[in-house]
Image 1 (tube, helix red, strand yellow):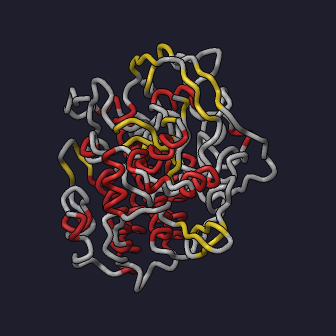
Image 2 (spheres, rainbow, N blue to C red):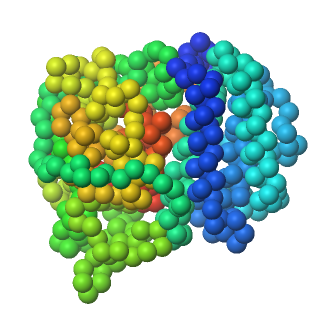
Image 3 (cartoon, rainbow, N blue to C red):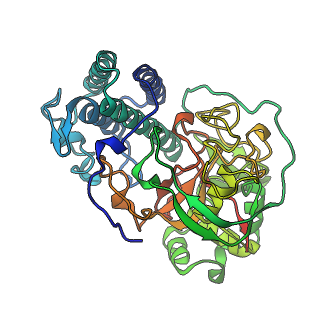
Length: 445
């Protein structure tokens, strides 16, 4: 789909329902989590190995401070920014100008200096929110900056898993005893549906704007995500060795990567194990399969006679109720609450990893989808693309550069901050990425 409008969005369209006080508290909570995730990264780990899927932690923390300062303290008008607290901030931390491969070689300030920069920016933003609580643009950019930090917090979890570091020292709420058997598909009517967010006071990203009509055939979607055990059956049946079971692009990736099973698996005399941060554990067969990419998900679907859902199918099943499947008034969460929380879904550290697909029954959607939020991000069949009439928000690098090259995912994972999620939110990664905390659910063909 072509981008039909590249003009910057007017400020009146950049809204948030959050008060300055609530935003200040959320920003502080995000910072506390960032610092917890930073534990153990100082010193030998702060520059990390050179990988295309990682940033050096020392750079990433400076980038967080730069981003928040740029939008909450320095922003004056589109393409106009005031001076930074650091004269070198733009040359070091502007991700749109500093090529990824160069970030290991930059003359980065040391750990203490970066943490001081983070603290100084936070103090200045908190003071400004107190001083100007009714400043609409400030509140919008404060929510943008907070969401940005929360997303980077999730990326730090990916980093720790990728590099085999110990699990982050964050606490969360586990699933308790809320387990109920879940199996099979639910039938949805498809039909006319309004895909995307509707204008209002709530914060949304530009790629969610705006709700527009789509038409779907009736479809059946799985109540639960594919499990480790179900995916292991595919691996054991030789699924990685049959070119006919993969898309041409997927098979090229498999050969180039030398993939014979999911990235963090190994076969032992007692069966499959998977690495969870720095520890190898027996494969939990009823938990959602995780760290599989879109090519692997597509191949499993072909083997099983299934398919990945389209974004509109996923959203209708997660956001609407049988009485109103057209989705004009969507639920913010699958279970109908005003905001996501870790009591209904495996979010924000929760039990520390993926859990059984039978957990969190209290978070079922009105149609009966289990864990549409949390546990694992879910690959869809759709390429990440703009909605009709797309208008770019001031943060130009968030969506537009990735249209056409990335695959859309939905629903969040066990490392996602609850405040980020809503049923219209779209995540996006290139289809070969296996470091993402991603799995998938399927539709009947």
